[in-house]
Image 1 (cartoon, rainbow, N blue to C red):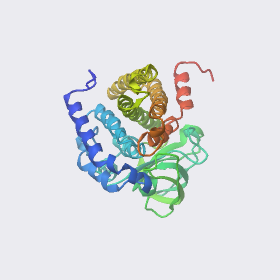
Image 2 (image 1 turned 60 degrees about the vertical axis):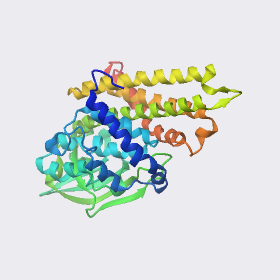
Image 3 (image 1 turned 120 degrees about the vertical axis):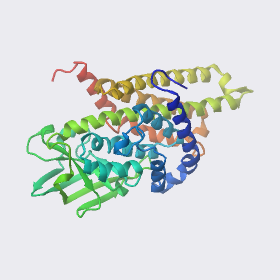
Length: 385
């Protein structure tokens, strides 16, 4: 359904194409991928062939030249596969690890890292969180020391989506003695280098089709030209990246909530109890109406903020609001959808139990609910320290 002024007929056609792709080439295999703990890399290459990984990137860097709302559509539609893991892995590839390369990368870095990532030839991951530092990016301890024509990297990263099989990492590391955010820089780190160790594949409550790793870097040497952007500007570069990450997460949460609502609606219209359809009971009908209203509210918030982002703005306050509201709403909607289905919603024959486990991460990853509230409060001038 079109939502002027955000979408055109081209967006609608793209949505229909992605929905068919998801229904035919992802959804039938999601349970298998969940049991395996990873998705096949062939599906990533397939998405590259279809132009889905670079849909909103310029043609000159290997993309399709579409606008930002193409990315919004993709995030919404991938969520309809009934699992969060694979869509999250794709989002890391398209909207987390790679945007800094497109914005700050040299021609050589774009050629060697961005173009192969957008074609599906290389798998990317993003290295921010550490065992001792999550939301507090300014306290990152992983460091890179300049040694002639090389950088020597030592430290660790955790909760790295795509990590166990990734070809490279967009890495945040400390390059100076300045405290806090002043001494951070970004690097492009090939993960087949000596000293790069995957210490553990993490076993998670949900997002099981997405493999996640704990890394340790033991004096890893990389060429000096792997520095991404300006030395000492890594904090600003990664904070910019996080805005897009949070916004695309918001779009995915909207898609998950909408899909869960549709499952609950269809079930309520077909299931009978006490001689009546469930949807004929006022309790169920009103709950579905309330769910639809909450989804539409956060959908419109997300679209409005995405439009500003597409115009070149970085409205941190509103992005935090969208991320917070969509994550909480999607959790609430999926939980209510399970309630409507009763026991059927709790078993793996239906996708809701998996969606219920997966969506919980949206209130943690990319900045917790509490961090989003801190950002909102700070940008409103409510905090004095």
